Amino acid sequence: MRSTLEEAIVETRSTPLENRPRLPRLALSKRNRAVVRALNPMLVTYLEASLELCETDSILFRAALAVCRIIGAKLSTAGRATGQSSAIPAWRIRIEERIARARVLIGRLICFRSGNTRPRIVRTVRMAFAGTNVSLSQPDITQKLTERIDDLKQRIAAWGKRIRRYTERSTRFNQNRLFQSDQKRLYKSLERPIVSGTGPAPNQADTVAFWRSLWSEPVNHNEGPWTEVVASQCAGIMPMDPVIITPDEVAEAVRRAPNWKSPGLDGLHH
Image (tube, rainbow, N blue to C red; front, top):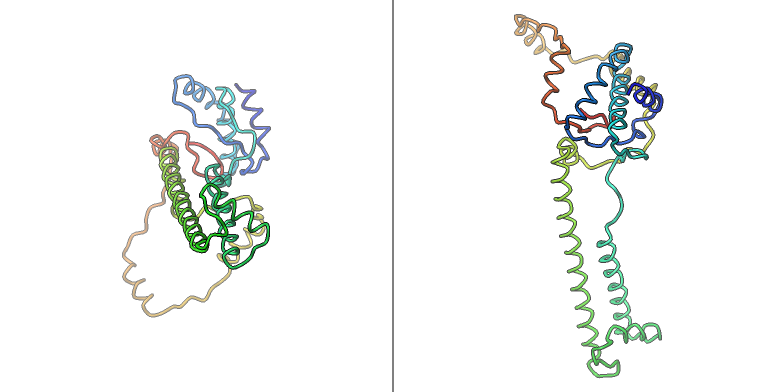
């Protein structure tokens, strides 16, 4: 068990967050609980030597990765997805192909109705009326063409409504499933559009310079008379005692947290 933990630490020491493997959701069985309890004492040495929050987060992720390997859970070899899959469902591709073919046919029927009698146009019109006992030389061919064009337009509208109806149903299904697995990610997706995180990470020096320009530069504030009135009114308010958070309070706060959910980019479960 210790060797598995050390291997996970060595492998993921310098791995970026977006390249970390996605940790699967584990069942709360007695065996899994026993593995977690046995691995927790081994983390004390690493956590005591950690000086940064990022390092602590990395240690906890390596421990979770070691637990998954000991239990035998299946891990994804590629990096974690940062957004929804862009693959288009097969049913939507088929319907869109039907719509595209119908639009091409409408265009050629309109060309033939306008007097274009090129062989390719005529051949397409004959195929459009195949099996209907409609001849291109009959007197009411213009009316037949108009009826056929209207029929194709109605079919396109029906196919478009089918795509919209299927998409809404798929969206509801995915949201319900996401609500059961990760409520926080669902609420985030509802609040703002999903943005892919495949771009370059911000530079540490640029980040420090940006916030330093906001917080370290002197600013001339508007010292109006009302500020002195508010300050005199608040003079009798006692300052709040400093807040000290103990490890026991943190343990009690996360005790009821949902198990094995990863709402953040670090992929670390509770």
